[in-house]
Length: 570
Image (cartoon, rainbow, N blue to C red; front, side, top):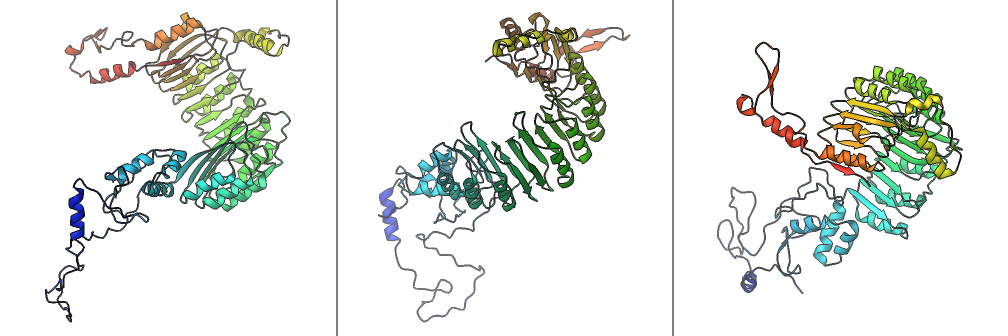
């Protein structure tokens, strides 16, 4: 059965189409003479011949290429211009209209595209079964995809992933959430189906097992010459690996355990993240690995290593690597990292923008070294789980680092008595006696006044007794499990606060936080401008109607102060 375009006047259109099926004109279109036995020598100004018969559609113009990066299946900022002049390799006729099989009306292709491109991959597969037009449109969407985020169910096989990737021939960014096991067959399927892959991320659930070993991963990285970003979880079965790639610039590997050899031959690598397991019997040689980074990865800018095997010797090896472009350094869970390690870092890398020494044994003296070396560059400082740091060191860091935007001091100011009680409840062991040297850790006061600080984390600071904050740009505050913080000793002068995390706190403290962050700060601060008297001895407040300056800026500031803040309790 032939389908045709339907219009409100269907009978008239059919009659017009039937009358249009005539033979062409017998006269020449240039000179008007009969065509039989005629050889026309007349030339026209136009180089092309146009047919005036209305029953023949005009030929479509050449296909227009997309000048911007296409993002289908994530469908955020993807836009396709489907116009009568644009053509497609599978859509014939040059018209964006869909025939009467779609609810008996004319549906523009652009509307159908906008609807289908917002569907997740499973729904898009179901929509392709509706009719031929929807199947063609969904096929174009799959082929236009450059980014795919897919969740692989627990009972799914490799063929499921292969069937989906086969539809996306031009994909360059792939993110898989694996609920089933991952092995070398999955890597081979990805390598075959995605020849132009540039970014790959594999996340594993708790029940999934990553069975990929080091040789298989090294072979995959060496074959994918366009791969620039690789993120993979559950890498406990690697054993050892040698990664050689001239295009790889970002590498994240987590759940590493007891690696006998790690070789990174990636000259363009700029970001490296290695997250090891928390087991004490991990026998990975981090010193040899760090030594190799200084010889083969000279472009490194960001380094993150989380391991209980981190020590002062590893820090010395890292400083000897002389990575001149290093901007972000994160050495987490290294209890053997001391103030001497901070001195070595400060002497070798003076341009750090982020420094994360969470879980180390540095003290307030180490914070003083950080403040002396990085006052003009450091914007993010993370010192969580550092038991030797006091409130004095935190206040000194906030006062000496003017560019600081993020400060994490979780579990630093802790109450030893509360920790012993918690360990007694959980493990049943006898509580340890608190020495006199630790009495200064209880009932500490913290005062922070900073003009650029945006995020402050004090989670688990059970030894904190009083808190005074004057941070106009602070928008995120974490006070989780600050059990000993008194509501009467809390003052929050932070008009830009958007969220406060207060789970595990006393009800009275939560009420004090809500009352302070929800009140209009315009009632606390006087918004009238001030002027000096003629003799310069006193300031007087001048109302807006007497002030020559406009009060528009003050209205904007008051609107920002009235921004609603959310207190998270659960």
